[in-house]
Image (cartoon, rainbow, N blue to C red; front, top):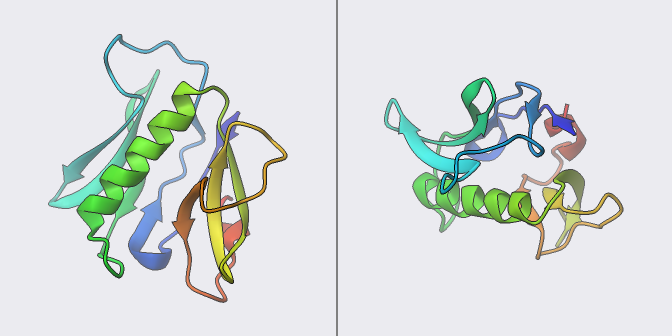
Length: 130
């Protein structure tokens, strides 16, 4: 499965590089997804055959979650789903907000359990998954 994500909504940028999110051999003990800093900004990276690629740039804080905390939480969630098999990105509505979710199955609906990113009301979550 190849995924291309982009967004500058809600203080994050999902950088689309047609990132392959499963099926690549990794180095033992290394996470596929991890949080680091670039230019003082928290960044979620993904290890690929081409090297480490930027997946999400956390540009600013949101409510009670500073960008650094969100980077760590979401990087860990991506890693857990990756370790459990195939990764599918979904869009939906949770608590009346558009969201991007992650799942190990294609036909799973978005819920609080698989929530990845909450977007501002009125934003188009589908455009984030271009």
